[in-house]
Length: 276
Ligand SMILES: [Zn+2]
Image (cartoon, rainbow, N blue to C red; front, side):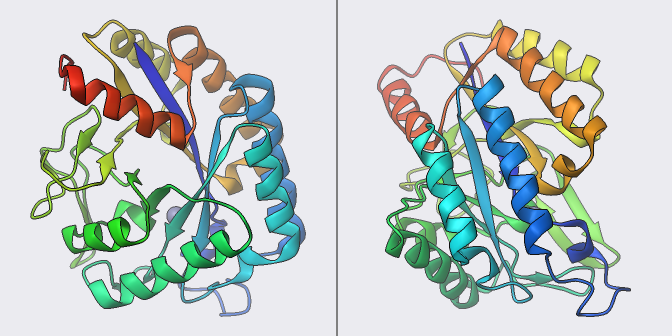
């Protein structure tokens, strides 16, 4: 059985552009709200509402996405069986990445998680900006009750110039419990890793189709994510591609939210008969 989390990182394109002025790199509230409404709409139409929207926080936009207009929309997402998660960009794109700084990660992740909980929302999932992950984030996730990590793209080994950004070499292609010393191998922490298997804007629909078919034929449950970004919802053709990808995935798999993924992974651990 193939289970899929429809995950959307709440980012905007200017964030990644070091050549722009600080002002031009800030998010635009009206645009972001319109994109998030599209995420919600497509999830309700095509994924049984099972959207996992990952809320951005970064030194440039620490609390921007905690404005009441966004909180109201997160509540609607959750009411239609979606989930809210934490997307922490502790970085200055192309200049610095702080994912190995456990104290800094702890402050950023703790801040957003507590702020969302204070609004009655219950984030369970985490994804690192740029999928940049260090194992010393694992205790931070445990302490914050974020028991589902979505930062893994098996095989990813990314550098920006000389700067190491992300390393998932050798990671399993199916869900696993993170090892505290090495995030790329199964172990005994309280955090379940769900790797990405589909990346909408990077892959042709035909490739997504073939892979969905192949993954659905494996042994035991397989839990993976399909990844896209909020800014992809700004153009009709891009929305159409996302909608078609969701339709293809729906032919071979079942969409689930963060809570359902955790329950399924724990149930599967009791049986342990699946492909990696
Ligand atoms: Zn991001």
